[in-house]
Amino acid sequence: MNADCHMHMILDGIDWKRAIARHNPVPNEMWIRSTLKTYQDLGFTYLRDGGDRWGAGAKARELAGQYGITYRTPLAPLCKAGHYGAFIGEKYETLGEYAALVQRHRQNGADFIKIMISGLMDFDRWGVLTEPGLPAPEIKELIHIAHEEGFSVMAHCNGARTAEAAARFGVDSVEHGAYLDSDALHAMKESGCVWCPTLSTIGNLRNTGRFDEGAVRAILETAMENVAAFAAMGGIIAPGTDAGAWAVPHGSLTEFSLLRQAIGADTDAILERGIQVVKSRF
Image (cartoon, rainbow, N blue to C red):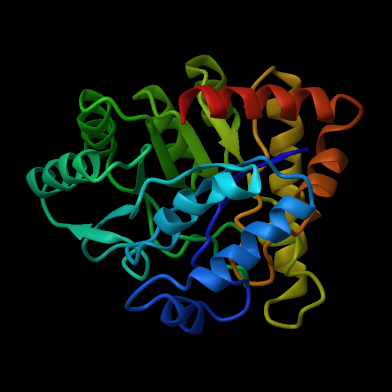
C-alpha cells in the first residue's frame, strides 16, 4: 500500500510532549524532512495528517512534493473546550466560535476539517471510553457547518452511537471507531463514509507492559471483528496507522498486517478502494 490515511507529523510515537516541543515555536524542518524521507523510502505517495496547531503538518505539506508525496492536512483539529483534543487542537466553546474557526481554516488553506467528537479508549478496561461522545444534534451542526464551507469532514470518533450519528449526518470519514455495533456499521455503510480503524494504535500496545494485556487483547479482537464485518458488508475501509501515537512510529507497517488478518484474501482490493475514496474527498 502506498498511502497512510491517518498520521500525525507533529508526534513521534514516543513522547507527545517532547514531540510537540520539537516544533514549538516553529516547525522543525530537519525532522519533518527526515520523516518524509522515511515515507518516501517505504513507497508512500499519499499522507493524510490528523492536524496540529503548531504548523508541523502545514510545513510537511509544503515540503512533501519534493519527496513525491501528496500531503493533506486540516491544519489544527477542532475540539470543544473541556473535551478530548485540546493537547493538539484549537478549542471552541460555542457553535458560533466553531464556525469562525472553520472560516479561518478556509482562509488559511486547510484541505479539510477534522472534528473531535469523542474520547479515547481506556486501554486498561475493555468497553470503556475516557468520555462519552458529543450529543447527536451538536455533531450534526459541526458537520453541516464544515460542509457549508465546502470542506470534507474527518471525525475522531469512538463509540457506537457517536459513530452512528456522525454517519447519518454525512461525515466523510470516521477515525478509530472503537466499540461499534451493527447499527453503527450499517449506518456507516449506507452513508458511504470511510472508516480508518487505526488498529495499530491497539495492536502495537501488546507486550509493552504499559496497559493491561487482557484488556488490550480484547479491544483489538473486538476492533478486528468489526473490521471484518464492515468489509463483508461492502463498507469503505482505508489504512490509517495514526503514526505518531504512542508505540506507532512513522513508517510502521503493523496496520497493514492487522487489516490483512481481519479482512482476509480481498484486503488489497478493499484498501485500494478506500485509498481512492479518501484521495477523492480529501
